[in-house]
Length: 130
View 1 (tube, rainbow, N blue to C red):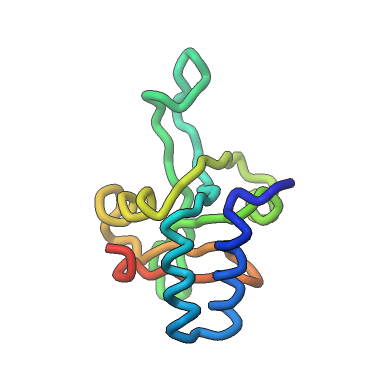
View 2 (view 1 turned 90 degrees about the vertical axis):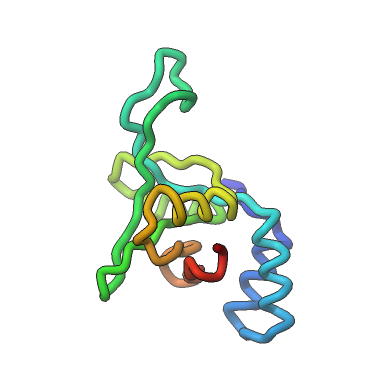
């Protein structure tokens, strides 16, 4: 299964996770603005053409230990499928602009989003993208 995000983004994320320097942060910020993620959703009502146009979708979120709501983003299908397991989720492409919209319009109480929940998770706080 292939990556949705670019290799340059994945390298920038890896570097930031290993060493949170100003240089790595700037490289990550540059790359995140140009990448796509898989965002898990439940499609509530598909239209007759079986596409998402005019369909209602519900973005999947988790809650951390302090009950903070966090949206989810995945860089590839393998990581998404580990999370999905037996749940009826599907995924749609999402960009940082989409997450900005989700955090400022759809659910203003959410605290941010998590890229690749699990071993290599990276939390992106809401206040860093608005």
